[in-house]
Structure formats: C-alpha cells, structure tokens
Length: 166
Length: 132
Image 1: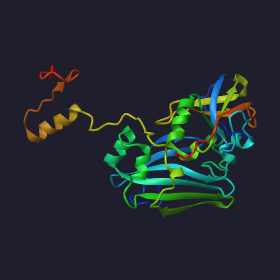
Image 2 (image 1 turned 120 degrees about the horizontal axis):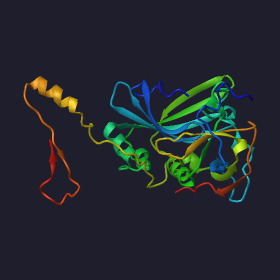
Image 3 (image 1 turned 90 degrees about the vertical axis):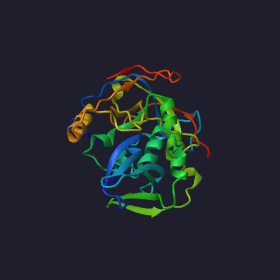
C-alpha cells in the first residue's frame, strides 16, 4: 500500500511516524513534501473476504498536528472535530490481480470509526525550534554585531530572579 | 511457505514469555482464538503484505508484551477495538522475536514462529469493545 502518492492535496506525501503497528501500519502520520500539511491515517474497517482495508485520513495544519501528537487534542477530536472537507475515506482493495485504492470525501464519520473518547497520543512534541548556537553565529556575522544567548533556570516559577548562564 | 533469506532478522532473539495479540471480534473471554488469528500478513488479503512472499515482514506476527500498550492501541484504533484480545505464551523453541516499538507502542514485537505454521495455545481475555 503506497500512501505517498495518494491523490490528496499536497502529494507527494512523506511518512512521519507510525503510532500503531499491527501486522502493518494501522495508525500513522504523513506530511506533504511541498506544503505544511499533515495527514493522520487510522485504519477503521476491513473485509477479509472482499480484500478491503479502509482508513480515515484527516488533513491537519502543523500546529494541529503538534497539538494532536502531544495529546492536547484528543485523538477522537482530531477526526470528529476536523473542518469541512478535511477527512477522506481511503479504501484499498486487494485481489489476486493486484491492488487498487478509492478515495472519497466523508462528512459524517460513523461513531464506530472514531477512537475512544479521551484517548490521546502522548508523545514529547517540540513547541519551538531547538536552540542551536550556530544560528547565533550566523546571525551575528550577518548583522555585524554581538549577539549572546542566555539560559534561564526556571525550576521554581514563583521567584522573580533566575540564575542565568551566558 | 518458506522464509526469505536472512529472515528472521539478525537482531531477533528467542524468548519465553507471555504476549498479547488480537483475535476475532466474535470471541468471548475463555474462548480459544481460531486459525484466522494466526494468519501471517502475507496470507491476509486485506493487509499490507498480502502475497509479498519476498518480504520478511510478511511472515512476522505483531504482538504486545504489555496488555496496557495493546489496549492503548485499541483506544486509538477503532478497527483494533472491535477485536478481542488473546493471551498466549511462547517458548524458546517456538520461534524468534524482534522488539519493534512504534512511536506510541513501546512493547510491540514481531514474532516469526517456528515451525512457521505453529499456532500457540491461547485464550481470549478481553472481548471486543462496545461502541462508546
């Protein structure tokens, strides 16, 4: 099953990470190679006799993706609370002749296709770009001025003076 | 069926432990899972690896060492929630496993049974989830 070239906005897609693997990826995310758009895929239905496996794919912004990944938004709300046109039904059908895929927009998600209320991903998720001292060197050279960084130890947020390190 | 070369992977190991795997949604606690619960991914028409006989992953069965991890996966994934949970034990001479955690499933493992058609004794410990 090649999810990278599905006919979704922002294709081609790149795999980001798999949250649930069960005899293959069942819950995972991908992002557009060209746009700041993420897709969260969740397997919701299968029919072994028909050879079909159906996923919901919800398109989310980077900030909503981070909020879902960190658990700020429940996994159910990532799908149930998606905007109009953001959720697509992706159905793969496998036969002895090969595999095909059908994409359909879906506006009302059947309750049995939604995650358990309250269930969340709980993954450490950066909220800002990690500090890199080399960025300061580049900035300093470009602007021809001294730039320094300082680190605040804020273990106790009730105090108004923090130890700093230059 | 014959495993491809270098399968199971070099990083695999033998184990003697209890694991958890999904089974048919019609089963109740105390039942024994049927043969369909032990189909290899290459034998599962609706799966990712159907007839991919050259892929080592197509012969490995997913299982969780932690029931809590499997239930978290069922919380997230409605297809898995509609299946029951089987508990089983595998011994050192019943194949090799690889620890293959996913981003939110630390105890996920893949198991290449030996012999390949081997199915362990197992018992259903949790029924399928009812709709919430």
